[in-house]
Image (cartoon, rainbow, N blue to C red):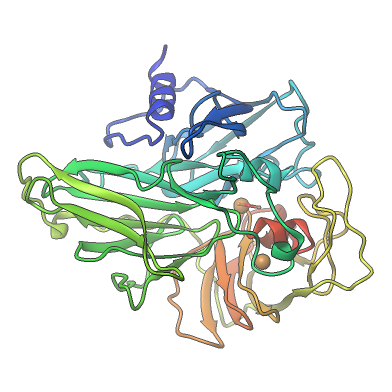
Length: 457
Ligand code: C2O
Ligand code: CU
Ligand code: CU
């Protein structure tokens, strides 16, 4: 058993992948085998889950920045699949989008994904074919690109935040509803952190912890805050902050939509046994997502000891010469039939981009826009609907510039959370050639029309 396999399997067994920085990926490509799983998410084991082992959550994958990430993805399910590496700027062929970048992976087939991890930070992986079905059943995992230099934390704790739609017997109920798909999406019934309900983590007292919160839910926009904690927001959607964000509070929680991530640096309380909580603000009062308990002697660390994270090698758009392209997200024209194909259909069409409803996982027609390689663009994203849409772009990283509704911070991201009736301008350099999926990350919206792609030539 090589070290990489050990890390993968031990992370899987613990369901978290909490390891010190010294963990290093070995050169041997592991195999990720998509399979059915069973796991006790609530009291009784849930059957018919989808994961990468028979009885554990998808593992936290780690690779060092600048190194090659290489995995063989084998599909043992009867349904087709494809794996996408959310937020990573990969060559188009490695992006995992069926028909657009590869053929779907059939039963007992294997596809090798290999690319250099250019950007450090917190990312994640999920299927992009039968996306609704496979994600709802569990196939969403954290992918961490470790900085080339040790950022100096005592502990690193990724938390995969997501719901499952289970009945009282702990078994899956309908994974979505037409009503949900046409509105905010269908919410799960069991909220989990690393597939556990309100898990408790022991962390070094007085130590510095990097908490990586990863929203892999298909629907829920989290509103996160940590009361009475000494901490700092250090990265959003993988990238170190350009513009500081205030520490979230009950009054002003941090909105983290489906697909988004936030990295927090926290100092654990010095006194052994003291607990802090990660809360989600929601109707009916705040909900505990995870508890962190100080363990051992006070390590006496200070947040000021942390060096700022080094910026990733992104090209900054030139706004003066940038070309403006407009997109509108809204209802679908009523006569669009739902798609069929090998990647699953919800059986409805509700949404559209620029009045065109696209067929779910895979784009069917031509690109929404063609961008010239190396040029700067401003994309005007207009949400004309009464629902929120986390709009995600593959392959390119962008800077939000302004909103018509609220002040927004200009931090590098791959997902812009558009509130109802909001218009956000984003800017980017079209520096990665290929066809890049562009869609809402509420998967029911994606699957019922709110999808398309941009071409960079
Ligand atoms: Cu999280 Cu099309 O991706
Ligand atoms: Cu993506
Ligand atoms: Cu949406």
